[in-house]
Amino acid sequence: MFSPRLHADVLKKVFDLSGHGMTRPLAESILALDFPEADAARISELNAKANEGTLTDEEEAELEAYINVSDLLAYSHSKARQTLNESA
Image (tube, rainbow, N blue to C red; front, top):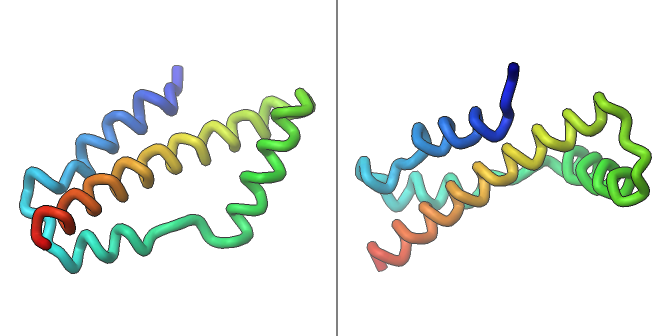
């Protein structure tokens, strides 16, 4: 059985670069990462459908994938900000 949450947790371990010498340029590059506008719009659309209770199973899986990647991105941004604060 595929578990997106478990996969995201494993990816967090891979991307935990702060303990492996994240450089200032790398931290700045990570902070520049974000969803393209089209994906941000799709996330908003899926969230609206979720709030209305009208998501299909496929859309629910898509939204869960976006959420997991968003969580990983937020985690990576946090680690990057920590690195920048430590080197300031």
